[in-house]
Structure formats: C-alpha cells, structure tokens
Image 1 (cartoon, rainbow, N blue to C red):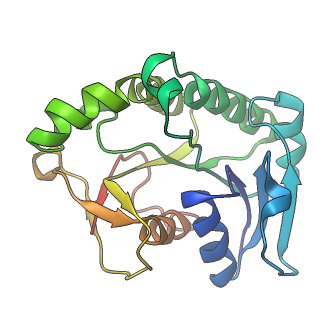
Image 2: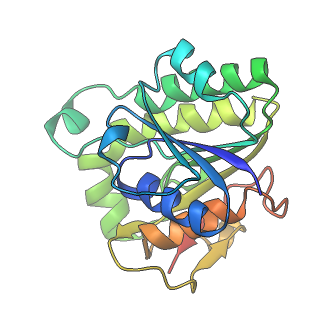
Length: 214
C-alpha cells in the first residue's frame, strides 16, 4: 500500500478520491485550504490545511509520499467565465517542482473533456455552446497544466472525465485512450475517483490521457 497526497481533497472528485483511496487500503494525506472540513474518521487519514499555490506548504505535504493525485477545481460562477483562470497551471507547476525536489515520481491528475487534443470531441452542444460560453478560460489553463505535466519527467497519468455527476460509484465506466473513440458522455465523480486510485500502483496508463465516461 502507498502513502498518497491528494491535492484539492475537501470536495468533489478530491473528496471521493480520499474515500476510495482509504477503502483500497492506502494511507492518505488530504491537502486543501478547507481540509479541516473533511468529515472522515480513519487512522490512515491525515488532513493538512494549505494552499496549493504555496511551494513551502506543498513541499512539506510531500514528506514520505509515494504518489500525488491532483484534483484541482474552481467554483462555477462569473469569475470562471469572465476572468483569466490560472489556478490549474500555477498549482501544477508548484506540485511538479516540489515532486522533482522530493524525488516523488508518480503523478495522477484530472483535467477534463476539452483539454489538450480532446478539444472538440464533446458533441455539438458541448462544443458550440457550453464550452465556449462557460469553460474556455478554465480549459485554456488546463491546456497549460497538461503541457507542464507532459514536460515534467514524472511518471504521469492525466484523466479527462466527461460531464460529472453525483451518482454513486458503479465500477462500470469506459476508459478511452484512442482519439478516434473520444466523445461526450457523463461519469460520476465516484467512478472518476475509482480510476484515479487504481493508477497509484498500475502502470497501464502511464504517459496517457484517457477519456472517462460512464
């Protein structure tokens, strides 16, 4: 079993990943500004309140860690639509540099359908309306995030989930690695977490950017 640092662990995919990693037997360090709000009692869980943009805080959180899972997210709202988004790329740069200094090699990150070479694969409504009106700024930054990861020299996997839902885990989801197969679809945050945790000790998707849909 591994000791895992989950960044962005207090809600959404991050919180589901904490639950799944613990269920799989891993020791978890849950890192987030609101980590104190994580209402899980487990001897193998350590919560650390910190800012993913703070190099010193991230470096301290990496002590003794075998793998890092980045589940960064931003709140939906006007700022995401109208203001530049930089969290994904800046926090990823901090994490990658800290991992290199600490000798931690395994990085698992979440971006999404529309990042990198998956842009334009979501179907007409997503591509023509939802993406340009609501997501373009965030995904421009996710493009930069993916570039940083690709150039990092780490052992990385980038997961690109489709439309996220709050449904429970099913274990029945598709992992699409070939660009010609990429398409829109929905998947629960819990199933995304299942995939992320499996990458802690599975080399099958290293250096790949699989699309995840239910």
